[in-house]
Length: 230
Image (cartoon, rainbow, N blue to C red; front, side, top):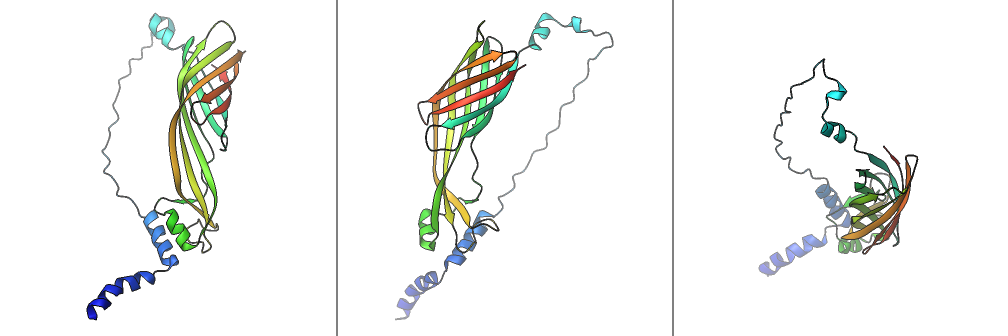
């Protein structure tokens, strides 16, 4: 009889744990500080100046004059994914003349709610919290080559790397897990990464450039770009 009581004691204690205690434990786990890593000191190298009062710009070699005159452009872009996702906002730049390096980065609106990585969907259902909606955040990075000719139209071909994070937005009636003054928090749902093929064109006029890009293969999207050429 005594042995049976010892076996039933852990089950009895586990049943006495309320959802409030479990949520407070999750908050403590989420806010627990990580171990600080040792940071190695870095000493900035010292460079000696070779400036001379007799130096003149025409003393530069042809190679030095050429490297200082590499054209580049910079601008903003607005993306519209064809799936049910929020728009993307980002920047792009091109470095070079007839064969220019193209780089861009864009992201959509971030999740504004308190996010937990240590809570499962099963725990949410067990606590009686209600799922409100799914938040999608997409981040894009593109690299390619822009080909310019004598015409005012240029073409860009490259690759687009994207990451799609999906979070469940959940309502907490006890207001323990959300930020102060809110009643919503979020947990992980899904994360997807992929590659798209990028093709676009750009029209140049008096230092202003405007264009359109297409992303296709996985999670296609359309992007509009506006920038200046320097």
